Amino acid sequence: MPNPSNTTRCLLCDTRLVKNGKHPSGTQRWRCPTCGTSTVRKRADLTHQHQLDQFLTWLLGKATQPEITHTYTGRTFRRHTEWCWQISPSLPRVTTPARHVLIDGTWCQRRLNFHPVLPFET
Ligand SMILES: [Zn+2]
Image (cartoon, rainbow, N blue to C red):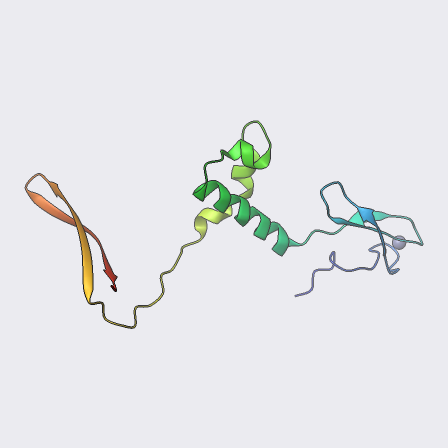
């Protein structure tokens, strides 16, 4: 489904837009030569990619949320990356039988609880 706000035509007079420098955030700025309006078009796919990159940087690194977004509290980071918690990673299907199996367990109150079984090849 095409996004009507993501075209290079003016939404007011339907004239083809021309490039007009960059927004301070680095996004392309467009200007209508007829009516003079200036717009910045956002791409949802690039925004989500950037948010996921920031989320993974925070999740797998040592930087705090405010350090990643250069803010004081990190609230913006949490609001922007809230959807990233809904991603469920999937492991590839095991097609070859494992020769060795690694089993981890914990002894709790006379009961041995096994943890994930991880097949591996040597
Ligand atoms: Zn226009």
